[in-house]
Length: 141
Image (cartoon, rainbow, N blue to C red; front, side, top):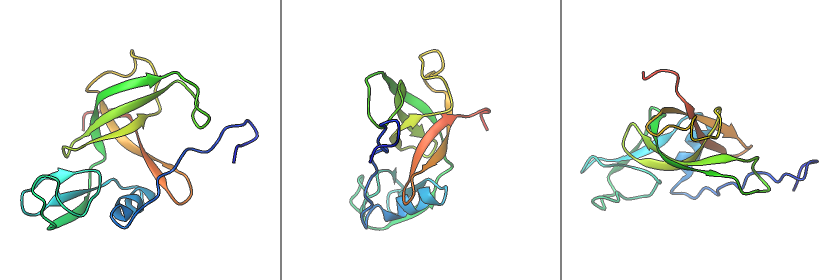
C-alpha cells in the first residue's frame, strides 16, 4: 500500500527455513554468515550445504559487519519504493563473501562512493524484516 506521497514500501524478502537464521540475525542487529567445518569456506547467501565442498557440516556465526566497496552502480531511474539516486553496491565482507546491498548515509555520487572505501553494516527495520545496508566507516579499525 502506498503512503500519502504515493511511495510504496520496499519489497521485502520472504525467509525460508534455510535463510531464517540470517533474517533473525538482521532483526537482532547482526550479520550472520555460514562457515563449513570441513573445508573452512565462509559463504553467503545462506544454504544448507557448503557451496565449495557440498558438506552439510556447517555452522552459523556473527560476522564483523565490516567490509569494503567492491563495485557499484548509481540508479537514477524512478522506482516507487526508493528515493533516487541510490547506489546498488557489491560489498566485500572482511570475512570474504560478497553481498549486494545499498550504500546509505553518504552522497550517491562517484566522488563520494570510492572503490575499496571501508564500510560497516547498518540495518533498516521494516517490521518483521531488517534489511542490511552499508554506510561509510569513519576509521579503518
